[in-house]
Every structure is written in structure tokens, then in C-alpha cells.
Length: 235
Image 1: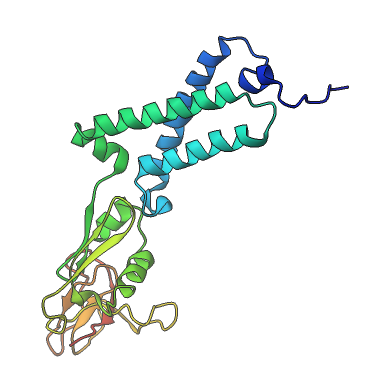
Image 2: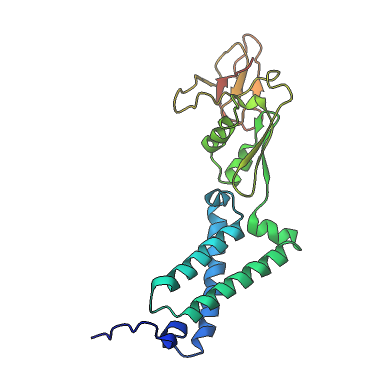
């Protein structure tokens, strides 16, 4: 039968029952778990961490776990907790020091800002590489009062997962791919390559706008080779 926990047993509170060498094992465990978690968070993408940088996000969850356990678990010695906190802070400080002096390492850990839209045309290959869905992009654009992609001069996916949007100087001068209302709410009419259509059309994949000559059929998109078109908005 387990002996009851003795309150204010300072030997147990501070050091526990493990040998002193176990402190070195804690350092090894902390570094290994920190690096492994850093790699996993980098892999799942920056959208999962919101406004924090990847390193800041990892610092928050690491400190939260270390501090919380020692507060109310009697079998977690305080010295072990303090050691974990110290190692995490030292790793964070070391990373910050290195990242400010190594742009290439900063890009590898934090990621890079990438351009998603330029002059009303979506870089679909960049979306795929960034694992950023078209629906997610359109949602971010609608939140910034964008009705069609032609209104966008430039849009960038930032390292924290947010999308920065810069509108064209005259949002009415260029037609574009409609994103309002959302396609889930009201699917736009679809046109296929080979069909005849009079009027401006926008590629459903990248937003490239074409105006076929009367009597001519729609081609594949000259930019992304998509065969699907929608009527352009803002004509």
C-alpha cells in the first residue's frame, strides 16, 4: 500500500527520489522534445499558431506544460520543473540569437512570406506548395471586403498564416474571378473549354481573365491550363 503524501516534505518537493544524474536526463529529454515539437509544428504549417511566431508558440506550450504539472502534482519535484523551464528559456534565447543572425535558418524555421496574388491572378502553384486552400484564400479576401479577385493588386501569405491584401488603385477598372457570394452558398455558372461564350470570363483556378472573340470557343487557361471558366465579375 502506498504511503500517504507528507505535506511540506521539502526534500520530496525540491528533489524527489531520483538520483542527481536524472537532472542531466531531464535536460536531454527537454531538448529532444523541444526540437521534435518544433519540427512537427513547422510541418503542420503556420496557420495553426495564429498571431504568434512559431518559436513564441512553442515557448508558450512548453512553459505551460512545465509550470502546470509542478503546481499540483506532488510527485513532480520543483527542481525538475525549474530545470525544464530554464532549459526551455535558454533554448528560446539561443534560437532568437541565432535567427537574428542567420536569415536562411530563420526562413527554414519560421517560413517565408510568399505572394499569392498579383494583379488579379492567383499563383495556384504557390497555393499548392504552401498547402493553402483556395477556399481559405477566398475567405481571407472576403473578410477584407474583396468581391472578386480582380480588385486585388497583391496578396501575401505571411509567416504567421495571415493573408495581407493590397487593393488595386481603382478596384472597378479590372474584372476578375467572383468570390462573393461564397461558392458554397451560391455556386457560379460553370463554362468549359470548347464552349462558345460572348463576354469576359475568369479562370476558376487562377482567375486569369479572357474575352473571347464572338464565334470563338473558350480555350484552356493560358496560365494554369485549367478547362473551367466562370463569368467574370466587374465588367
